Amino acid sequence: MKRKDVNKQKKEKRTGEPDSRALLRMRKQDLLEIMLAQSREIDNLRSQVSELQKELADKKILIRQAGSIAEASLALTRIFDEAQKAADLYVCNVKRMTDEGETQGGNLSESATEEVTEENSDAGEKTYGEKK
Image 1 (cartoon, rainbow, N blue to C red):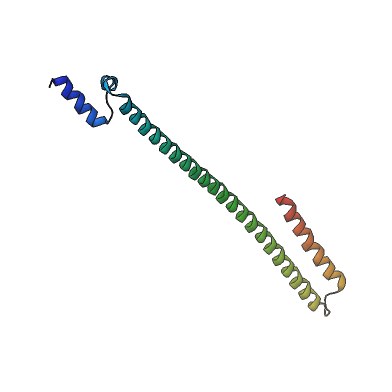
Image 2 (image 1 turned 120 degrees about the horizontal axis):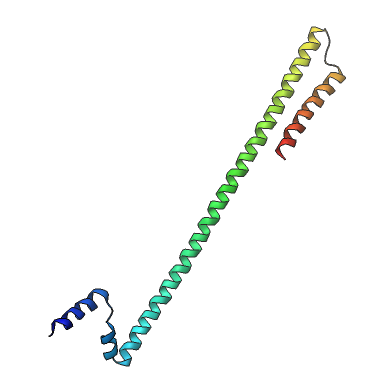
């Protein structure tokens, strides 16, 4: 065998593909088999690409949802913090009014109770209005 033929055979073994001269010498049946094998490989690769694209889309959706959940959680935390502040303010005002009423020798009057309630509702509206 000639040296060129040996090199071609080595190349063919390494790449798994015959060179152009070898293709020209092949029978039609062999060429059709090669084309069929390549067609199957292409179909296989296309299905893999499709599956990977679906997985990527699912992961992107999960990432977006995770961001939305984190934002919602943060918003709820802020709302609960503001509600706790309003409740603490209400309790503080009731204690203050009770202490003032006891030092004056009487109980809380209805007007004092209404005043505390109005102060707390105003504070809650201000807090809620800021979040919008």
